[in-house]
Amino acid sequence: MLFRLFFSFLKIGFLGFGGGYAMLSLIFEEMTSFGMTVEQYADLNALDVLIPGPIAINSATYVGQLYAGFLGAFVTTLAVCIPSVVFVNLFSTYENRIRENLYLNGILTSIKIVSVGLIFSVALILMLSTTLGVDSLSDLGDANLDVMALVVMIGTIYLSLRFQINPLLLTLLAGLVGWFLFYL
Image (tube, rainbow, N blue to C red):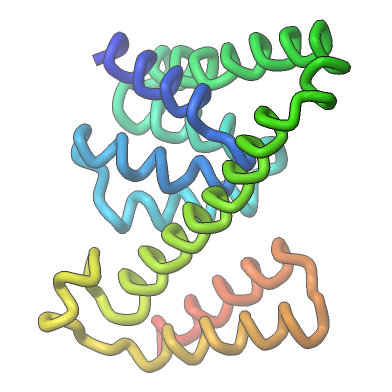
């Protein structure tokens, strides 16, 4: 199990261009082979917002702990960090060549665009699971609309766009509203 976790997060670290949010869809895709549910994935996303630190490291630590305890958390955290160490050293060594290479700049621009799609897929998966109770678009026939979750989601999006409230405060506020609605 530890070897599978290590190599899964090593792969995520090497392919996770675009930052932590872009990595989240890769993490979900990879962890479904370990049996990760959409609910566990939603918990992972909530913790990533609440816990200080890089999203990739927080996610790796959470998943490692979930599937293999403390040693799993250590192994997955180490694995997701190794590619960054390699890339930073390579970039600092060849920085001028990289900046002047038109082909490489084109590739990096394309990767940025793909990262937006990956982040959108994370948002879509979470929206489907929390507001409709389904795990994918193919399950929409079994959807069961949770009106309160939809109201909280729309309210959070509105507050974020209109007033640019800190995401941590919005997460805590949404959690408080959800807790209050659960016990009504």
